[in-house]
Image 1 (spheres, rainbow, N blue to C red):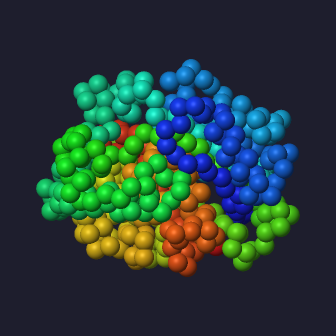
Image 2: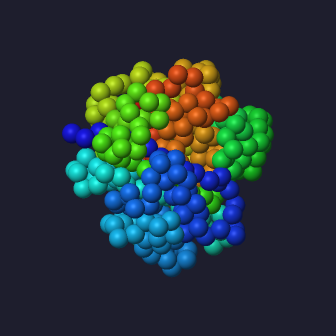
Length: 387
């Protein structure tokens, strides 16, 4: 079976960009990804565009065609993807499947989003869901999990805060991060309370931004001047999407789908947690990083707080997590987040991450999660990249 190769990436700084539109941000990063790949617009055979909120906020639809047209990509199949926070990872999975099926040789994936807008309100799993109507919006759901983790495993407030401190430190090294200021445990814990025990600095900021990748078949990568063994040759070892069963009683200590998707990704990639050099994961809230690290097998269940406290997940540690700054520091423009994770991993595996470079990184894993239903997740993506 054909193993897709990422041959181009592009990304803009995340932040508040009131003067920018979803289309022009997406076009900017698409141009950058094409330039990085050494391809012309006419070389792209298919496009996938990731966005979550444009229809709700601006009444827009089929934006992907508008974005790609701006850079001269047209007369090809274009698919617009919405899958909550995993929209970008889902779009990438679909692009890889198109390559593996022989439907395309070069595919553009773009994620672009505006969430730093006054009318957004709280992100939730849908107003038609009874849990949402009863108040189970994202901060509340993660706060419940934090309380349970603390009660059952002895996770401390300081360990939760250390996730934010670490990711702010990483973000300070990333020119594309929304927040680049350092913070301390004391500052995190004394920031305004959102939902006990999660303070404001433990919740990811809404942001505007865009990111793009070009994925190709090995034959197309060679024609673009890349060869296996070249540092720019980044193979897709696994790219998958999972959803929950919604059948079991709620387990606030884990998302079953998270564990199942991680096991399947490792199986498809032919490796295990000990082989991973760098991780980008869904740290929408500090407790999220702790629980996801456990699901990925970076530590035993219940020891996620101890893992961050040990320094293992910081730059220079055993398995650096969210060296980009993660959602907590880089920002969370939902439709762009999953693609931004992949841009970071590609830069790490190429050795192009500058001051935040993970030395000798050869295997990177991206995990993202979106939506809540019956105590599990509505979507979970896992991507394993390697060189």
